[in-house]
Structures are given as C-alpha cells and as structure tokens.
Image (cartoon, rainbow, N blue to C red; front, side, top):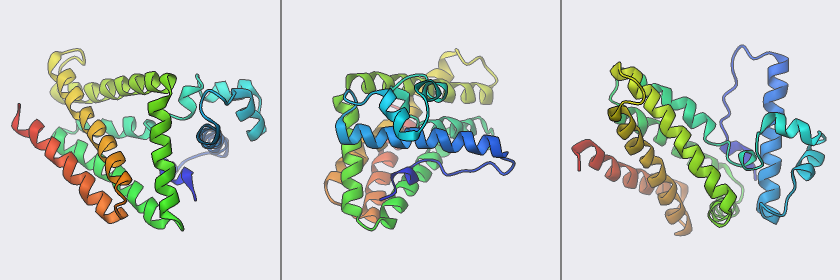
Length: 220
C-alpha cells in the first residue's frame, strides 16, 4: 500500500535538480516518520532513529522539520497553499473552500480505490486518526496547524475585501470556513469506520460538508 500517495503530488514545472532532491528528501523523512509512529507510537520513536532510517543526520531532519510533531502533520501544507484561492474576487469564498475540500476528498477516495487491499488502507487511515487523538503533543500541534490555516484564510479574505487581516470580518469568516475541514475530517472517520466503499464514502462525506456549508451560507 502506498501511503505517500495521500500527499500532494504536484511537481513544479520549473523545478531544478537541487530543489527536486530537497523535496523528495522532505517527503521521505515525513513518510518514514509516519510509518514508524504508526507502528510503534509517537513517543516511542526518536528523531535520531528516523534520521538513521533515512540515511541522514538528526540535524538534517531538523533542517526540514522544526519539530518532531511537524514530521507527521505536514499534510496541511498543500491546504494552506490552496487557501490563496479565497482571495479571488470572481468566486464566492464558500464556493472556493468547497472546491478545495472536494478535491482533497476525491484524492483520498481515488487513492483508496487504487489500493490492492482497500480494507488495510482504511485501517491505516483510522490508525492515523487514532494516533492524533491519543497523543497530546500531536493534538497541540494540530491546533497550531489549524490556527495557521485560519490565518492563511483570513489573509486571503482580507485581500479580497481590501481590509486588514486583523479586521473582524475576514477573521470570523476564516474561522467558519476552516471549520468545514473539521467537519470533513470527523465525517471521514465516522464513515470509514462504517465500511463504506470509496464512492459511498465520497458521497456521504460530501453530503455532511454541504449540510454544514448551508448553515454558513444562510447564516445562524
């Protein structure tokens, strides 16, 4: 099973050999760490062991990831980059956010469909979620990652509205929109555990996210 396929596979067209080498090493470090954490638990794995498994020094690991927690929670990086589309004045922010969420969900369900053993793939994702919930350090890091997503969304929305990013309007809108990612994450866990097929999973999670989006669209 190819766990790394869950990550953003975009390759810059003008990528130079040195940049490609750095990108691939960063991915290898994170993928190796993720596998080791899932196998043995987050606290039981030392950064030096991850470095040894990848044939690099511990210092090299920290050059790419400032903390041990960031090794496993770099999946939000592509989401943060995608949130720039919220600044597009020709597209409603809610529509833009739903498009990002749908793309991420489709990538996941397509990955599941391509697995030789989808059941094992689902088990791995559920274990990943359980690891996050059971590890205080990862929970704290995930909260920080959510704050960064909110900040990224607020910047884009402020740019769209022509106001400062600390203005209350883009801030509250960003908090509401990023809440849709929490809905999607929780819905995924619930429906994965129910044993749905990838197609059923996509439809069920999309339905949950769009129900939540209606609340944002119509107001409380």
